[in-house]
Length: 275
Image (cartoon, rainbow, N blue to C red):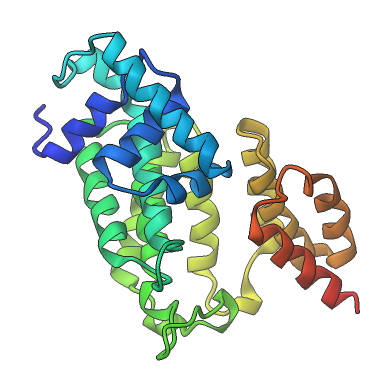
């Protein structure tokens, strides 16, 4: 199979097994996707100097290892696929909740990530996580029109006009997700896509199946534990079982997420609900 694309080929070159996985992804985001060190640091929830160091170390390691600047063969490609998928996922996230500059959403970045995810699926057509990744990005992107008001301010999920969601993208994503799930090998992208699918299937915000969403976050926590996933589960817990239960859940996260503004947004909202 051909890469059919220079950007995708470069991503595979950057994701060299000589480097630790986090350095592969950071290098790919910096060199290939053109994200700033600040944006990448935020994606990994680390400080800017720490990320600067990580990228510098990755570059010098590549130089020392005399890594050949060529696209890997099929076996090596399979080895590098998860790092390439992670880079595409984080690239989309930066476009979806743009942290640099005035824009809240950087459409071209989202669209480029989706284009790359489609190409990745052509390289690995039977890989359920590649299907899950594309399904996830399509589901998130389907809400693009409804996410900003006329002044360019963010519209929360509960206030969005669901009629303006892109139902063609949703249908394509749901079909992909069903196909992925039939493989019986759930992974992080498939689980996140399944959560996004529950939002997409709910006709109104009030009809959202929060109990099922919490269960999916529990499974996600088990296979890929992270404080951000626990924070997201807490939001589902607050909807299903009330703010007090959610506050108990996020209390131990404060130290890990002290630089993550969404943590304080969630905590503030829960405290407000409790008066």
